[in-house]
Image (cartoon, rainbow, N blue to C red):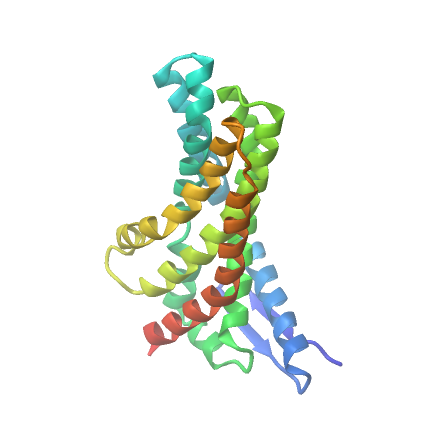
Length: 249
């Protein structure tokens, strides 16, 4: 069985996906992996974007202890919320570029015309966005959590919550990025559209740590985050693909 071969000309942003006769699911999976590899290669040429996301997260998380003061009890109380808000805002920084460049140079039209379902290709872009803009935040969060005097158990729970929450932010964000394609002031419009949709992830993510600090069970918050992630993983690529088709028509 032959897999799809993704031919990428990263310099021009052009991607051609050739699909020989094969079973649909392995072919779509291979195309998604080709798209993931393409996005990661393009991101390596724009390392400053990754540094911007990380530095923004560090700055947001570091300003609050300086402004509020060194009182340990107060810092432990606000730490989970501050770190989650910082991760949320950092994720927003690069979302408007998820589809914008491919939309501008016509690559999205080629992808829409390829035999591979567009939702699978969109899924590859979403995974790449999380690997670039979400996973580094998860890895950096424990170090920033030490500024707030969070104990090891709270830091472990913070990582677990962010591992569930940051992919959810990327999935929901892909819908907003697709809906605002071609719109004037797309970045501001994207933020206004997505911030209300991000509230449940913020509430349950920071709520898990607040519950643990109060001696309550935090598994319910994590379960709700996981359920939202599963639903979003199923629906977001299809919704984003539908919005992209509307934008290019």
